[in-house]
Image (tube, rainbow, N blue to C red; front, side):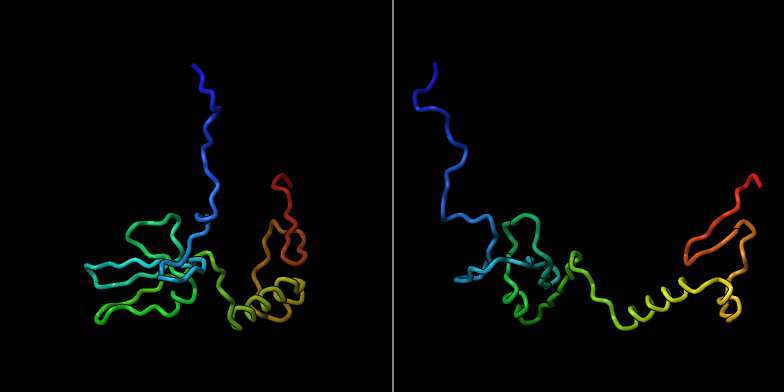
Length: 140
């Protein structure tokens, strides 16, 4: 027997449910960016990146509430860094990178003349251009 009503719809459209997870704080409707978990045995509150799934004993927090988070007296707050966020390079990192690029671009003859700790030439190396090497065939 077939039903006269037709196929059942798998989802009912609703304006109440949102696919975006919201901050768990009362009256805050901002999107969540971090997840707070309490470790009662260690008296520690752990604030980390937004968890993949909403867990029943965890609290999702927006950026403002995660920055202003304080723990109960005697508890420690551990803030885990978001691994997906790229770390900003320091001035020393940029300078080291620039020096490495300059060194790689310098012709081999000038590097040997400068006496700057140049490497001994590889007997298989025929020519060099920047960071690329032309190698002699092992058959020759």
